[in-house]
Length: 463
Image (cartoon, rainbow, N blue to C red; front, side, top):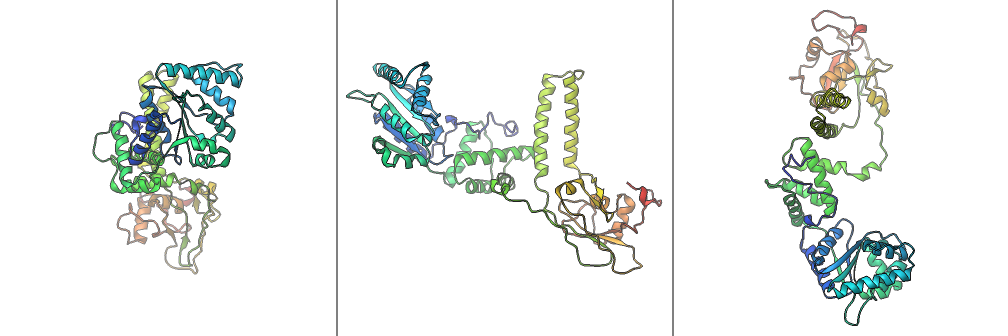
């Protein structure tokens, strides 16, 4: 978790509709005021309609919180039901056992409860979330519930919360009577650029953050663009950005982190077929040419870092709860600790190449074979030459000189490094090579196999 890393008391970008985190932008504030006024004025039916993710449920909880002192409230979300089941859900929420009751008996029981609340001077508010899922028959049943009234007041105030499909249902000729009874219709709209920034700052503040700006202006711009100002999307982007920021030790979220989050959350890319690359031979030349076109590995270090951080949290918790290393659990935690240390070592150092040889004698990694990559293309020299037979390798993204030497020559030591420098005078620093760069290596069949001490070795015996 990133709470300690960013000095937060609680999760600022959670998925539950906690009204404490509700940010009342201009549009949300107007909607809340309209709904509150409609219920206070005993209008009978009010509705809140907006696309998914804009905070309808959170706003409803804030409204019910304000009404709680002077009204009895019920919040229903089971909307894939028939009329009988709806009445059962309502009465069960009121503590009534409906087993064996028919619809008439349930109506009478509800009327008794509503009358009792009116005599106590309290309103009764029924909020129905996801109302777009209700069938026309159930919506008509809800309309009939509004007939619980006295000559002077409605006994039941009903709030319908739903997506735009609810508006289309209310506009149908079959539900014209219900449409006419909805006297207040509130809407929600996405946040603009400034409201998105204030929304993020508000949630961080509620969660206990007290430092400087946590997101750079560039990161904020990407979040606004990709989320389209929808709070649920903003929450998802910010949560993942803070997770990666914590795993990589970044105290401030910048554009690089947010772009990585956007790429990771691109669902459309997962639906596209993966095109396997093909080996492309280079033009014929003196020496052996090994040419690959392969997509660069992306984001594996960050993902491994996130996994390592989670493992570290688990290990720390186990070390506190079960300090005894003599127990089975203690030995298990010890093994996990060793594994975590090994993973962190792999992240900070270059992976050791381990592969198998192709028909041409060149090495291919197990990952490449599993992924279906073709064997490398080996082009023999066009004619004999007095020069040392060499191999020209095109550097892959993320590849090191050690990996290249092990893959092509089969060994890596000071003598091999010396030969590589001989053949590549342009390489000033063997620790810094770039993707796409051509490097000449001692040939597979004619290299000078030299041990680290400088003595000749048998090529067949090298590891």
